[in-house]
Image 1 (tube, rainbow, N blue to C red):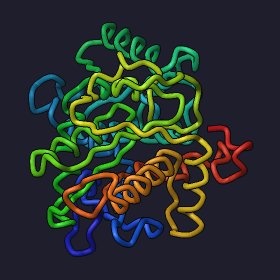
Image 2: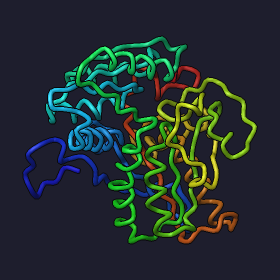
Image 3: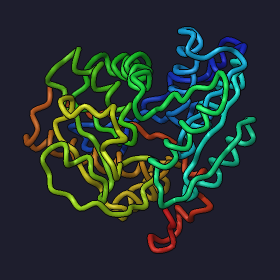
Length: 326
């Protein structure tokens, strides 16, 4: 996080060390704390993996200076990778399904990256296939593949998890986070469970996503408006480890939308739908800990607010639920 105390040499030095802020509507007995990732320079949690993964690939020799990173992404990962690539002498190409935020795609372009769109109906699977096709056609090009690369998890194990535990003096009762690639939750969960195997871990997904199938739940796959988390195809989400998760909670689009609007109006958080879902789920977990339904080692819950609502204004994120395009 940017500090006023010492001048910095690069924007990369401002990534991480984001504030942990209490969700004021959470129970007084079991407070919820949110890692507010919009404080990163690219305004999302994905700045962490952009920096971490590009630096690691260069260090390992998997990518040479002047080479190209090609990544299938809904947008925020692209912005994170583009920031890192611009500072580390690497080119960036991103393959983005058409339905995702125009703001994100404009920002990737502004950061010097090339954006290639794929049809919405092909989903992230189509974007992944196209990214690998492009990499095969170019020299010194790699697909970091945030959906399967262990560096995604490692980035959060090495940065996000330790920051949370330091801020709370190790007293973490539950970890609740949305799962897209699942890298954020897996990294934090691994770090937390190594320190206390009794920490309760909750994965959050939209209604219509199918992560719940990993817990033996019979769920119906459907479209959803919440952006950045959830999956329609578990085969593309190789990082998700069900053994680290106590439960998967589904949050409806309407509940997430209500919560993101409440967070802005009542608490001053300008966050998007994945944060609304995370907040709603984290508050629910906190209430269950308070009521004795969950046996957690500490009376605290930690969640992650991945990005800012400003990226979704063109989709009517603060309008009525019916007007919100998702």
